[in-house]
Structure formats: structure tokens, C-alpha cells
Length: 461
Ligand code: GLY
Ligand code: MN
Ligand code: MN
Picture 1 (tube, rainbow, N blue to C red):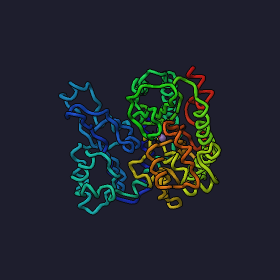
Picture 2: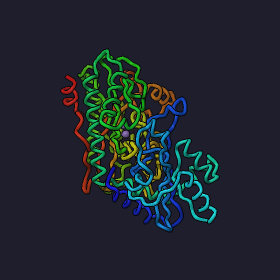
Picture 3: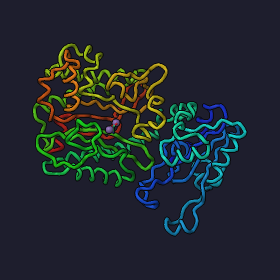
């Protein structure tokens, strides 16, 4: 946990942004896997964690904007719990660790909200994403499940986004810790990437490293020789010489701060000439985009820079044709990169995505495209110092998509479908780094993970 003053400052800043009523913030509860007491790894709600630092289930927070009082709701553990769980801090002790003076029983959370609603106070809540929280809010507020998301408080959402999107130096320190674990995960994967090894063996080692460093993985490991499937969680295949292995993984440290990196490496340690050529196009996109990060730049423009570098590279290789700018404008490049350049990262690997992608990644000056592929861009708005973003261009050869586009005769003026036939077993490449927007540019966070062809081949020797 950070010092309690930090949580007090965060709640004060939040209060200063919203006019009146109650801000209600239920923490996460335990979630059962296969029978009630066999639960998934507990993960606190990131906003609850941001404003309290408390990583314990069954707590809730109300910030009364009129009286300016924050109250922590929770029940003290009883001896029956302590026998199974060991000694536990009291709710009063927990509250004091984050600068909260007022506490009450968990059951009062519902009572206080209902009374405030009856008295005509505005009840602000964030969009719930877990079944348990939806049931709780439905019971308290009487809002039907299918309306809970749209009735969430836009003022509350915008205030939380404006606070959490700018990372303070003490948060960057935490992210860099997670990045360092990510470095260990990636370099270990590179060393293990030999023919005959199963993908799942490497995925298991990566998860172990994240847990061993005191946290966990920041999202389920993506590790596959079928890197053309963007988020491939299937780890069942045996590694074969000649294939590329795409590894997209990161760590979440004990305070929920994340890392998220992708590397793509040749099984056995040596890129073939064509793998090297395509890899270096993706690498140029990655490095040019990192160099383009600075305050005032719109991230959507950095995204299009990646698209242009990729189109230019593929034109040079005869996989695309025509003018790169025209191809990108038409959306022809989305056959090869049907996703956005990156996203915000912080206490969630896709930071605050539960608050609505558009509320985090777009604003009144930047609206989401509806073009295939470009519509997936999660982050488009102008960058500010303190943002942490991922830069993750990719080049994928997705056989089903190639076949569909070819059959439809899509973008035939920009795509050489005949030449593409040879690439249907190539797989996919993605190269992802985590970048802090500084006062005048961008800084890649963490210990540098081998990225050039020479660096990767060297560590895999
Ligand atoms: N780790 C998923 C992503 O890169 O967005
Ligand atoms: Mn990733
Ligand atoms: Mn990412």
C-alpha cells in the first residue's frame, strides 16, 4: 500500500470534481469457481483499490459529497473465520490505513444508499462488470440489470478517468516493478523456446514467475505458434522448427499495477530470411511509433503511423501494392493489422476498460472510426504527460480473413492475393512495449526486453 495520505488526496481530488450526492463504490467480493468456498484468485476492483488500497473482499465505500465524509463498510471477522484464515485486521484498522475515519457494518451500505435515494440525493455509481456487483446494485437501486450500465454516472466515470489516467511517479515505480517481472517472463520464454517443448510448458513457467514475484499475470498468457489469432490462449501445440512463437504476457504486482509486452521469436532461435524481413517491418512500426509518442499528439495518429509503416513495408515485399497512404486511407492494411496500436495501462492491463472504452480512449475531439479494424482502436485521444500506453503493432496472416477478402475482391488495387497464398502458414507477429508519456516525449518502461533480430537470436543461442 502507499502512504494513507495518498488515498486521502485521491478521494479529495475525486470529491472536488463532482457536485453533490453519494459516490458509491462496492469493492469486489469473492467469486466461486466450482463450489461456493472454492474461489478464483481474489482481485479487487481497481477503482476501489485506487481510492482505498484495500485488497480484501466484501468491503464498500461511500463518499458523501455533501458532508465530505468517506465511510468504509465491512464486517469484522469472527472467530469462526479466524480459525480458517488466521488473525485479521479490524475494519477500523483497515480504514485507518487509508485515512478513513468513518466505518460501518456492511449491511448499512444498502440502508444508507436507500435512505439517500429516498431523500432525493443523486447516487453515483460506476458501470458494474461482475455478476455479483450487478445483483447488489440491482437490489439496492432497483435498476434492471440491462439498464445498469447506461444508468451509471457519467460524472463519476469521467472524474475517475481523469484521475487514474495520469500516473504519478510513485505509480510509475510500481508499473516498472511489474515490467521487470515481465522482462523475466519474456527472457525465460525466449530461452525455453526450443523444438519439442509444448507451448503450455512455457506458459506455466511464465505464470509461475509472475506469482513468484508476489503478484500474478496481468491477463491470461497469450502464447502460440498461431500468433495470427490475436488473443490465442490455446497452449496445446508442440514447438516446431520454422515456426514463430508469439508471446504476449505481463505481470500484475502486489498493488495491481500491470505490465503488458509482446515478443515474437523463432522456434529454435534463428529467424528465416522471410521471417526476419516481415519481423523488421513490424519492428520499424514499433520503434517509429515509440519515437512519435509525446504530449499533444493524438494516439490515433500514432496508430496510423504504424499502419503506414506496415503498408510501406508490405508494398516493398510485393504483398501490397499502390500508394501506402491511399491503402491506409481505404483500410486495406487492416487485412494485416486488424486491431488498434494500443491502450492505456495502469491498475488494469486495459486500464479502466470497465468504465467504457470510449470514455477512456476518446473525447469530444476524437471519435471512434467505424471502419473494419480501425473501429477496434481502443485509444485515439490526445496524449498527456503521465499517460502509460502500449505500443503494439502487428502483422498477421489470417487465412480465413484472407479467403473472405479475396472472395469478395476487397481492396484488389492494394493487395496481392496471389502472393499472399504462400503466407497462409506464416502466423503472426506482434511487438509490444509499455511507454510513459513524459513532458516532451516517451520512455519505454522496464528493463529492455530483447527486441531486434540480433538481440533475440543472441539470447536464444
Ligand atoms: N495483452 C493484451 C493486449 O495486448 O492488449
Ligand atoms: Mn499484450
Ligand atoms: Mn496490450
